[in-house]
Amino acid sequence: MTRSTARIRLARREDMPAIEAMHFLSVQALNTRDYTAEQIEAFISHLGTYDPSLIDDETYFVAEEDGRIVASGGWSLRTPQFDEEMADSADGSGMGLSPSSAKIRSIFVHPQHIRRGLATRLVQLSEEQAVMAGCRILELWATLTGVPLYCALGYEEIARIPFAAPNVPPLLSVHMAKLVSTGTSENDSPRGGRSRASAA
Image 1 (cartoon, rainbow, N blue to C red):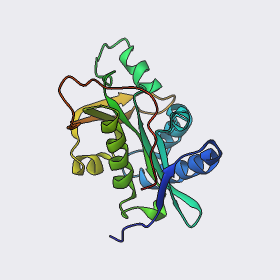
Image 2: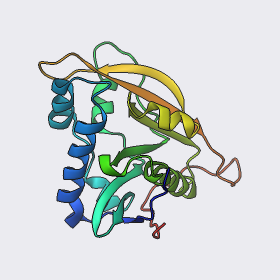
Image 3: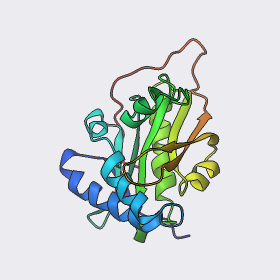
Image 4: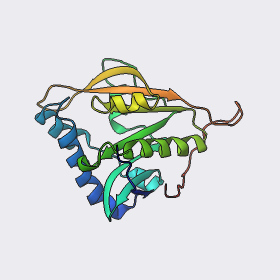
């Protein structure tokens, strides 16, 4: 694996078209082993690939190489909308994300830049920022395609949950989590607010 020399910086609102275009390429190229073309289209159009409010929170990052955005990802104390809908569903599954955890969010890599350590760098930067904010529990929803990466980074599978989308079989997603040390006292509690990050 050739490690990428891409520069990681905070995402900006003007990056959104490039982020979205890269996400679509990533999903359409890298998830075909685990999902049908119809499921992938439903994922993009119905569930979406990221929440732009994370950009305003300054907790979403892009990896930039030769002036192009080749990967992105971040974290949030916010609960994703699709998880809130799942938690309120009639089946009472109760497998929603914890309100006190940091959520690793929307890690995507351009298909021409995979296996160069970009996803790992983005996850680790997000984890560092979450720990600085006082969080000890890290959670995420992974696609089936992303599970091996998160397992390698120390996340454990909690449950596999099907997400409903119109006119396609349910999309299977994996709830994963890990516990980290903040390096602070046990009495410290998670803190909200913005988290500024320097380039990595």
